[in-house]
Length: 341
Image (cartoon, rainbow, N blue to C red; front, side):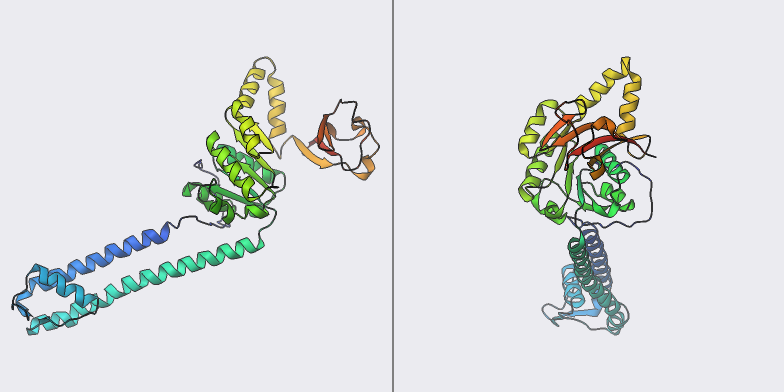
């Protein structure tokens, strides 16, 4: 589900990372720096070991140099090994003391920065969760996920109402560059979906690359939000029934749909062109779902300005030529074709 290269714009999105990556990298960098300071101090002490006195046996070897450096940089200072010569004391004053300060800054700075970063991130997450409502969660930012987001935006959904969940940090970075909210994590996990505020979402799109992943995500979403509409893509047609049983409201079979279009393209290429036009939002002809207006109630579907493809009434969908439609009634839901202009 990794994203391809996309058109970049100013970073306006919010990253709600499930696993913090950058603080871990910073801690490792600080540990490397602290280790280098430690080894440098050991080398300085060992080179001038004749200027130090060990109260136990009078001699300072490499192990004693490591020991003295450790207790000195950590400000423990037991006093059993001490600089005895003027040179050793001068080196401690001019070199080792600044190294001790640097060592402490590295360790304390790492702790403070990690705590600050975590606190700041948690504050951003709480602030985002407190105001997000009626958003769409897209699970998977691969080819299908990106296409779904483009269709959402073409239909009028603003970027700040779209939340992307993907395991690939690079995909989330790309989504953020487009102003979307990104969550790094597995959409099949309940804690990740809770971070996406699935309980307040208006719809969930499952665009996983594997059918088994799609089933797990659908089951988890349905458990956390029993009423949210779920649209799921499935590669193999025989798995569509399983997805519906898992709680998906709409299941789109990608391989079968692509196969039908390929078959149509041989003898009816213009039909395929029109279908592509209808499924590409924002240009040419657009498919649109709406409720019958007051002025349209009592009219037949053919009397409307828009081309009516279906009418949903009482939970039952009727095709445009079904005689049971008769005239339009209040609360009828129409699927129509209209020009984008």
